Length: 379
Image 1: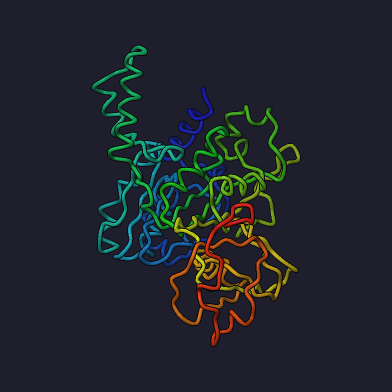
Image 2: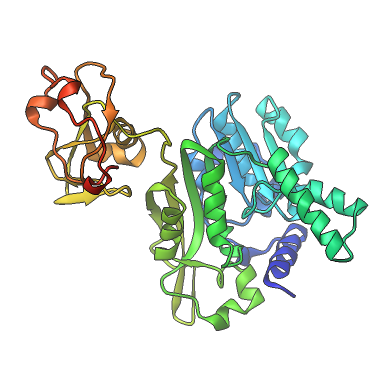
């Protein structure tokens, strides 16, 4: 039996009977639990509460949505202006989640939740549609395999399960550790693809304090139990940095390990991150001042911010630093008047002179650099 088959079978069994070893103790807001059927609550397996990052009006994507608990919590938070999409590969879990959709629609005053069958490492592929296609076109040889691959490519291009730039928030609860280690980076890339610019990530998962040895990785019981496939703390963060995210950080970190296996501590953490804007870097005279407490910090794009100094930034970077987790650490200084702006081309650590960044006085735009030289470190 493959690791993925072991995961599928164990979570299918988790629908038939509660599996206490598949979850950590987690406290959820009781206001939202009251509306959810007990069967879903009893057969929910997670290690955190990513629903607390949901905002009214969000389009939320829950990876590995299971019986639908987090989706139904999120649906109460997003309100009438939002929607929630759950993606899972387990038919038994999807059946449990869908079983209560009419009931929950009545409770919520509208049907704003969808449950889709798909792989979280390949969110464009509609697996339910593929199952239907395979029933009509069974694969028996390489010719059939080629036909299947051609159908998959066309389906992902014409009707992706989750389209590009379509989601405000991606959440997940103790699922990434179940993905094959060779596909974990693909999950981060797919999350990046489906998020809108400035979209957010909140991933609760089990991580290890040191690398998991091969002997543990080959144990199907430990893999399906959220142990063998765990990221290290460093690798968890780095997967999202490599995918292009910014503001990547650990928001919650359990002080007590969930389990200790062969001396390795496995604990619940929640990672947060943000997809940057794709707009060009234009200088319109913005500046920021890093509050401290560190002597200086460097962001994911290489900008340097010494404590208490007015640093020049482009409009895109300014907007990023004025929201989310960054905002509490920076003071923003806007131009006194709207300017057309020019391509920003300044090396890391460039100051915005006080005479230019005063709210009463600014140099005109034509006194700034008019061209970009890559050798100087354009952002």
